[in-house]
Length: 231
Image 1 (tube, rainbow, N blue to C red):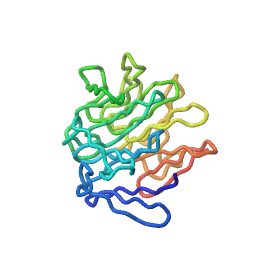
Image 2: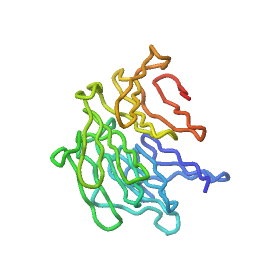
Image 3: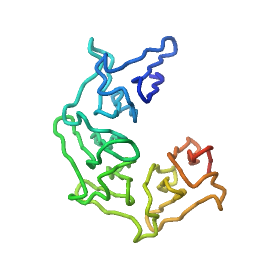
Image 4: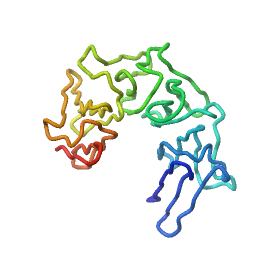
């Protein structure tokens, strides 16, 4: 609906509808005032990942947030929604908190996946959901692909660095882009092989926090200290 949301380190979230700016905190029912992730779902609700769990904002009730006890006390550093409407929540990751893998919520039931189930790491920094239902997870140790039944992992054995996958995005050409910390640069995956881009190729910094696909199909990488755009 055009509403702007801003998460803060210790002051909850701000919601701006073009006229009024409203601050929402634990006093309003938010799980924690340290906010790590914001995700708008297909129904128009806003999911807020915090240092102490997740809250869902609809703005239609006297109590604006829905709480989820299954995630209470957990640091939720990334959130995604797959093509079936299922919500995914990554724990730990680059944010403070204990890594407990990913949690899946279908609106009724919760399910937790960890390294014991095949996930590449219990510290999850990034989630990306493809239209065909495949979900990708990035974290310490590499990348996981989940097709609804099994995990396939990609790490040092395919040439990826021993760093953390900070971001995952797919462009209009169906190429998957990965951003790494610890000077890993960005990596491009075409379903056959991985290709690395670093400062030597024009990237401003080899630490890449996030990647964003533009309507024109370009990939904009939020590298440390600057923004880089690749066509």
